[in-house]
Length: 150
Image 1: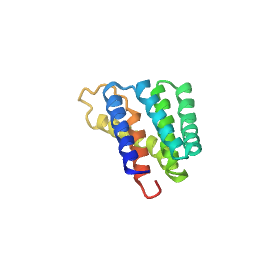
Image 2: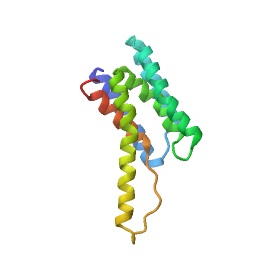
Image 3: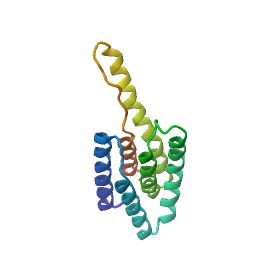
Image 4: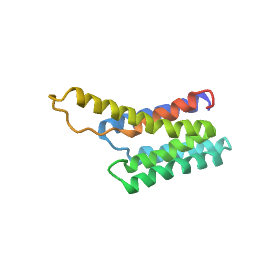
């Protein structure tokens, strides 16, 4: 992926991540237009099939989890999976697999740290927190695309 395209993707991910951390939601305008831009880029570079396959393969399990347990994974994460899956698909199969697997691993790591923090601060009043998964999805995709196979 050329540096300019990677920089635009990074900017999109930064805006999405900040919004998700602050509001715990991902707006349709950001996820939809970003996915549209990734597909436009893929069409321009004649890699539309790879982007479509990556998007479908990542969005399907996210959508399934959201439909089964909506409180555990938001609809915004499922919609974000379309754009990020397409972007990771542009990097090839190995890049896509790393991006798809690393996102949930990052989120699980963050959640584990939060649980351990509660254990070691039993007297401290800690509110029940949720983990914004969009940040992990974005980081995983960007790291996978920046790696040697991306």
